[in-house]
Length: 315
Image 1 (tube, one colour):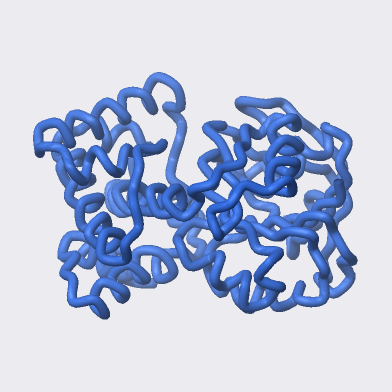
Image 2 (cartoon, rainbow, N blue to C red; image 1 turned 30 degrees about the vertical axis):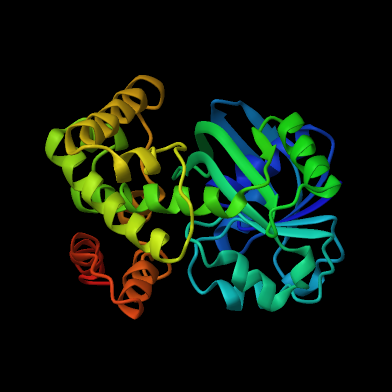
C-alpha cells in the first residue's frame, strides 16, 4: 500500500518505520530540522523494536500525490490548518492518531466524509534529542467505520498495519473506544503535566490515584450526557473507574500504575515530553474541549478545569 503520514514525531515514526520494513511505500510529511534529520539518517526506532528505515520525506505538502491511506500523527494543535494543506490529496482512507475526540469531525471538513475512519491509538513512544524514537508501548491501534459497520477496507488496512508490527484491530464500536481513551487520557495528562513524573510514579501513589479517579469520573459525566457508552480499555479502565466504589476505583488506578512500572517504567505522557522540550501542548484541543463542552451542557468539571487552568499558566 501507499501511505502518507503527516507528522514525524513518535507515533508517525513508529508507524512509518514498521510499514516500510513490511514493504509498503511511505511518504513522511515533515518540516524543519526533523525533516532534515529523516532525509539524512532515516527513521530510527529503538526500544520495543529496533528499526532503521529510509523513506521519502515530503517538506511541501502540495507535492504529495494520491495515497491509499493518509495517517495524521501531529499534535492536536491547529489541526485544520495542517490538514487543509493536504486537501488536494485523494486518499482512499484517512485517519487521525491524535488525542481527543474532535479529530474525526475536523478530517471530515477537509476530506470527503466517506474516506474518514475513526481511530484510537494506544501505542506510545518518545522522540529523543538524538532524533531516534524510543518505542515504549505497543497495546494497539483500533480502526473503524464511523457508522459502526464492519467493512472490508478497514479489515484490510488493520491487517496490513498489524502484520507490519504495530498491533492493529478493526472494530465496530470506534466511537466508544475513542471516548473511552479520551476519558482515561484526561485522568493521566493533568497529573503528568503537574507532577512531571513518569507515568507509573503518580499512578501508584494513592494521592495521585485519587485525583486520577476524580478526573475520569468528571469527563465520564460528559460522555454520558452525550450518550456515548464507555468501556474498559488501556491505559485506564474508564467504565470501571466511573462506576465502581471509591476504594475499587483507586485500586484499579494503582494496579495500572504497577503494570506501567513493570512493563514500561520509562513511559512518559507526550504532554510531559512537550513541556520538557518547551513546545506547545495540546490542552486546548483536549482538556479545553471537555471544559467548554461541559459548560455548554450545564455540567461542572471542577477538578479538570483547575488542572486545565494550571497547565495553561505561562503558555
